[in-house]
Image (cartoon, rainbow, N blue to C red; front, side, top):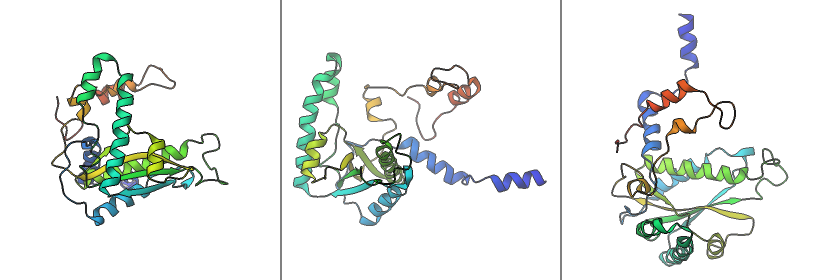
Length: 246
């Protein structure tokens, strides 16, 4: 009886429905590029997403992020031009057998989405107090990426689509958005309501890549270390809830 009571006290897990909702958001999140609908995004919803992003973990509690909200259509067209140029520069870097597929992919929804958000990292935010950054100064960038992920998962829970535009010249973007030297644009996001979320990531369904088997990515004690057979078997026996098997 005492043992059962102790277990109950130590169980800080969510109730089953809440736990399932968290995993559903993770497994059904998509990088949205082509399913935005022409509906405005209510500020009350956007505020909740930004609050979720602002509660991301950050090394040294530095909170290095800032959020630039971009609604102006002319400015977004200018960002789209930066994307087009960057894509033209990236294309020759692809192997010849993949260039045709690359050309066919829709990789941004800059003008179709309700709004854009540029999430930046202020690299001077922790000056004079480099807790957790002294040996690893890039931790402020990693912390900002955590804010991006929080935003993305909260958006999925709200039924809001998010697409990360990574094919972009950061210097041109900084100039367009008046981002100061000490700040780095970490993520440029297209945000808005969508007609639906696809069963599989677009790049997977289009044949660009497939998800790697997780059990092949688990190592024991050192890089490349064999072992953890039971864990790998447990992983192989799982199917992400809410996903259809191809």
